[in-house]
Length: 334
Image (tube, rainbow, N blue to C red; front, side, top):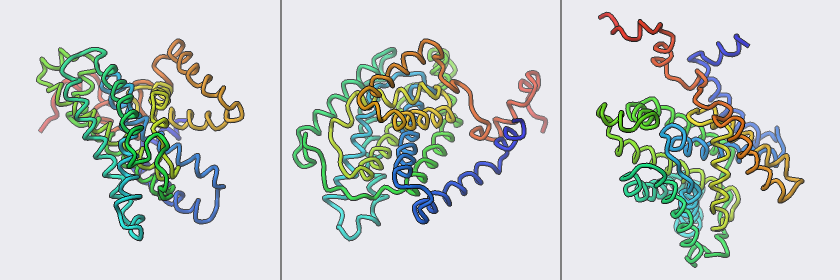
């Protein structure tokens, strides 16, 4: 076990794992190493990892409580689908698909900014109320826009989401959010989570940090929505209701708040469990929320709550963590 942990803490491990993952993501569909159903599940896992990570940024690392994440996912899904199905030239859709994904993320980020500016003027549970209302508004809006299918749903979307494309965006989301968490703004997030007033006294611009974190979180929710839309080839406003937001919450709190590896584990376990319990049909949608209730009673911190794999900790932070307490207080000698 110690040899495995030391291997995972090596600085060369992350690039090696990413390179191996990219090779497998191309080889699996090219050579049929796994059947199409398993490939579909893997794509779902990657999309759910992006969603779990993005919500964990707000609910875990910053200590706020957002319950309308599916609304930002819907914005990304509809924006990207509109571009690929109605605006881009048909013969260039595959080439311009990355542009559509980024546009979906930007659309969600703009909506996140609109929600964040008034929400973070106050403290407490105000964000939960606003994001819940936002989720309901987004669903009602898309229900009544005939240009994107209204309540009938958006059809005619090309199957453009592939395993390599999804793996790439999963790696990008982990990399961006890991760097943000360990930046000065990330330190500000942790200060807000622990004690916001004390953070303000230590010159942390709490409102700017909150808005920035929420916009980044919304951006990656939009990316996940764009990937989902072009995997299913059909989207409907009912797919992005409060139940979907609850699914994302379960993944975050199952894996553990304030942990990148926790988000990865939570999304993977939840997605696989849903597939394993598929023979139970609608009863599985009863069992999964019950899982969240049991988790909150017996292990509220989740599997990896507030703990991190060394693989996701920058080198400087690892050195600082290995120092003795008295050494941390002394500045390094010139």
